[in-house]
Image (tube, rainbow, N blue to C red; front, top):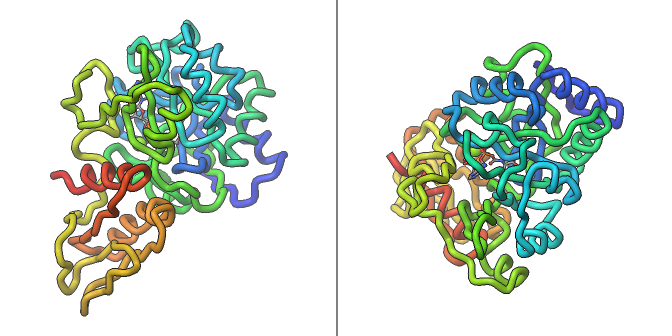
Length: 324
Ligand code: TXA
Ligand code: MG
């Protein structure tokens, strides 16, 4: 595995060639880092599953370079999905659509749908553009963490977590810390109205405003009303550090603490993060959870943010992180 900390047009072209040749390339997105493979290469995609330790029936998101490539991977795209794509791509939103013949079972987990996203990070877009020049159609990429663990928001976190599972020819591209910090909003666009499968920075209110439709939230865990849709991020336990996460209690000496900046740090408690805005809370949360493990803490107390939108997405992740 090679970590590329300076990414130029040339290194992106090399990374795209490596992808085309079947290597894995971890790359930054605005949400979290992804572990990428050529979405048309069954063997490369199989390696994503083994490096992550993820069950093979969990579908992957395909990252595309522009809205124009939606039609390659999906069919019967509803009007409201086009509106959402026009409004929020490139950006932290994944659309689940009816798949085309190009989206094989090894990407969709055998489902008839496919998840698509145009990421907003310049390096991700640069890599996708170079990959298209190599004849590629899309990069399959889950978050670049081991299954069930906290998603990485820096290249160092990817390296620390996956280095021992990656091959010599695999790459990690360093694009600095991810600016959003929680994974994309996933929207099921296979019925008459959008349904949110995973909360994120694109909120219910934003989706309703853009589409003019009433939006259903179906994010209540693996026992959701549609068990045929498998979203591993909707498992009750996910996004977990090794430390035990306890929500909304008073931290005791020796505990880690994640809380808004107005909350003081009790004596003997290890402050991991003190965000002053909800955006900062999202951006730094996963780094703070990783820091707890680096410090060998047994318990992290987290005071959850209140409010809708991004705050709801943060609470969703925290509840899964805290689930035993
Ligand atoms: O922000 C993100 O979405 C990041 C970055 C790297 O793009 N990716 C990410 O991928 O979070 P992953 O694989 O860790 O989580 C994607 C979730 C999984 O829970 C998967 O089950 C779900 O998306 N998913 C993918 N395709 C789907 C589909 N066709 N139907 C339902 N869920 C799908
Ligand atoms: Mg993930």
